[in-house]
Amino acid sequence: MVRPTETKSWMYRYYPPSDPKQSIISIGIYPSISYARACEVWREYEDLLSKGIDPKVHRE
Figure: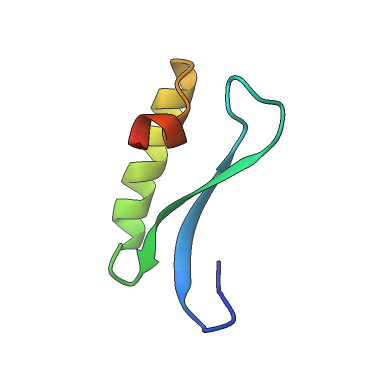
């Protein structure tokens, strides 16, 4: 995602287990988070979702 200030962020869009609406969680700001690290975090979030855990709730 590129913001009006030209800041670039890695975002993860998903459907929480308890809600039919799409949710978005920030993975981090590019370039401080590399593409490889963003992919690792994405896989962690996918694993949490497969277990029925909301990544946003787990992160807090």
